[in-house]
Image 1 (cartoon, helix red, strand yellow):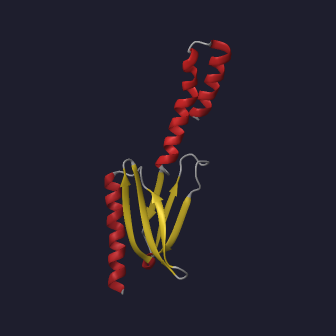
Image 2: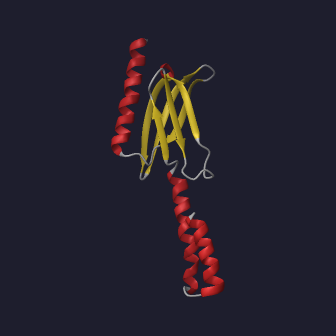
Image 3: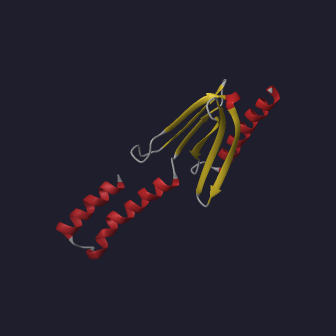
Length: 137
């Protein structure tokens, strides 16, 4: 939305007002930088549900056209391991589940916008599922 407003502002500035001069390009560049930052930082909405016999994980973007939403649902007993990786401002969750075809599959989720408390709660919940799986075997 800010990019659209910036483009309209740029057009009005360039052809009608001409107040900013060469700085009018900032009306397009700054919103474009924000859009690129949103894209690089990953999907903003992360939903996790471990109630019942299955794990539901959804990862989607606030801006729908930036990336395809992820939605996975699998039984808890298929969870093998998970790993969280932090690189500066980017945080990722890698979940490995057992698969009949390949032996195991790794699913990747972007958790950059979660707070540290939310990440700790997620880790606690996933550890609890893995511990329960080891006790069943």
